Length: 182
Image (cartoon, rainbow, N blue to C red; front, side, top):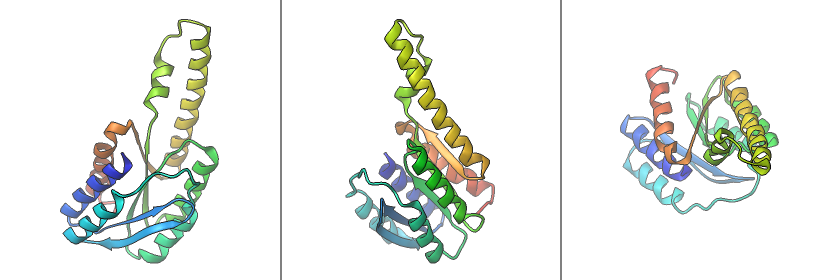
């Protein structure tokens, strides 16, 4: 979903005349393309992103964002597609995102867990479902608290179910463009 959303977002941004680049990383930088315009950049992005496979390695946001700071001198919208399921990683991402500001504008895009939310909304029928509801509510509240932490520090976030990721990322980009924050 993140790769698909990235490609759709890049397509819209290039159509609007913006430069598009990307960084692919986990514990190290796997690929980096400086922001450029044009169809060649889109072809390069599609060719490189569609071959990616997810990994379970911890992301080093600080190192990658430092690389971005060194290589992007113009004010840049930096859209980071990631998970926010771990407090340690979320704090690392927040700290790294704040290092980008105010020169750059970070946006964190993540998939909300629709299954967890559905469990919190279901009225429990038995003892097991009560336990499940309490656990799901704690997970959901922690996730929402993490999102509020980012937003309260000025870092934009997009959190939607997987099927809505492309549309939500594009809408956030268009909202930011319309507000002339870039």
